[in-house]
Amino acid sequence: MSALALPLAAVFVITVLSAALHELGHVAVAKAVHGKMHGLVWRWYGVGCRLEVRKEKLWLVALGGLTASGLLALLFLAFAGPFARFGFTLNAVVVFSNLVPHPALDGGYILRHFRR
Ligand SMILES: [Zn+2]
Image (tube, rainbow, N blue to C red; front, side, top):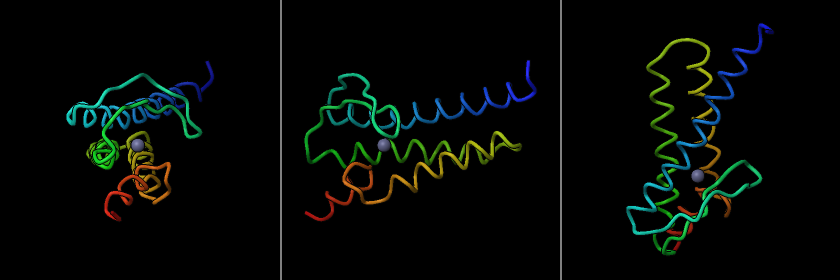
């Protein structure tokens, strides 16, 4: 086995779990506001959830994913080592890149709510 196999596997697992927890944050809030999940969908940035939520609650659902990634970034801060640094950096990048007020990103949903 290559010396790179284990680190690459760890990076892959951290990336997939981080993305899954981000989406679970969206799903948890969607369920809390009585929305429905209709499965997963491939998007240009990876996998997303197909959610049915009342329009005025979309910003809360967007905030759920950001909160999950933010908390995960903080959790990785509690550990030392290159994989913890990778996990922190990945989740911090997810949070800050999703804060960009683009219509397709979480930040866009949040901005639309506050511009009404
Ligand atoms: Zn999101």
